[in-house]
Image 1 (cartoon, rainbow, N blue to C red):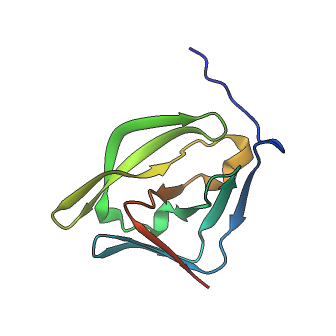
Image 2: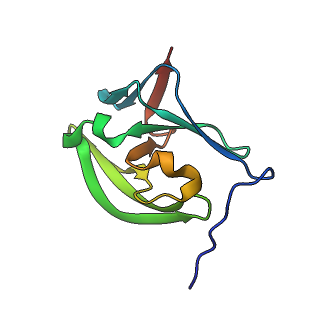
Length: 123
């Protein structure tokens, strides 16, 4: 089965810009990421998403997941679970390892489900 590959348009815009300020990510009581190199992705009417460089995520907390999803605008997403102390937060992080050309900037970046992690942006 061939998956559609769509390009952003005026009806479905996507922008990727450097985030102004420092982004911190907390899972439970633990800070797992801090960066001043995050990217803000805005897609159509969805809430903005912070993409943090994978290199700025604490490596000891990441657990590969077998979960994958597909976005016709961004490509195939892979997932990580987060081990924070005794707690395992499954499929908390997603990444596009080979993103579509329209969002190539998010390569080597990860995003976090905002209802399961605290993503804070400070100027």
